[in-house]
Image (cartoon, rainbow, N blue to C red):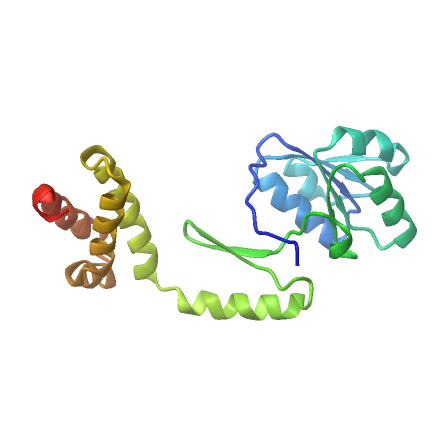
Length: 209
């Protein structure tokens, strides 16, 4: 399998979505929320997606809009049209809703738990199982895990001003991760107290790291 996970910066990128059905609209929303400029090729589009900032254009000008785009999403129920658009977009980033493996970019199921974004990709074998795995993952990640994420970010910023060596910073971050006092504070939801505790530990940083 040649696929590898990547996160793309989509702000101000140009995305062409061919097809305004359920899948096309869902993909359009996703890219709009990421800050992309989205054009939808089709006969109609929902008022919601237009209000979010998408533009509806005629399929008759497909070649023009493919040329305009940075990324093309093919999401119609017309196989011949999908193949025609895919041919026009041969040199572009292409996501195909009908045959994902025929494109060169896949949009996996993804979700946020606070600032953590998690994607599940089954290689196209089972979108249903991707959703089931998502539900299981959501049950495993607890609130204290998210608070630990915030505390690690807080600690990293403090350490960058105090410790030059990256290995030393990482060592100290592991200490915070495994600290029993921190664990209890976060389990009780006391992030601010955990930050104060870390700051106190940093007073003796030169002795501990």
